[in-house]
Image 1: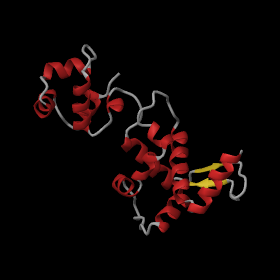
Image 2: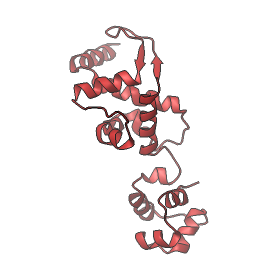
Image 3: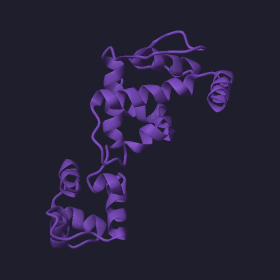
Image 4: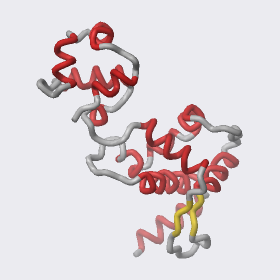
Length: 177
């Protein structure tokens, strides 16, 4: 099921208002919403651009960036940790969302507000979408638990905070195994 109607309503728009904004007849949009008609590629793209989402998300796949940022916010505010089996050079078998976020912010001289909001995460943590696993969440047809999503995000932050020499050693080690 596509998300056209959901996004239209969450943006407080009527069919007529959306029709006027995107230049598509309102009866056509209604047919798209009810899946009685399928938009063509350029129409999907125009609607996705209007709602600031990916075409795949609009088609009903994946997770929105806002949803992923919300998971990041939740992981920071609640004590989210993940246990791992580790090998050298790592010594700590637990990743803490709060600690990894604070480490990243400290390294990049970002002050964390008392009450974080989605704008804080969007401004300072948009790099997480460069991580292949996090980026895949935007288009996946698979379902992930919130805990799985948080794990992917925190892993992306962890790898971002590693020193270049540690990354180099790990790449060499993985290449030689």
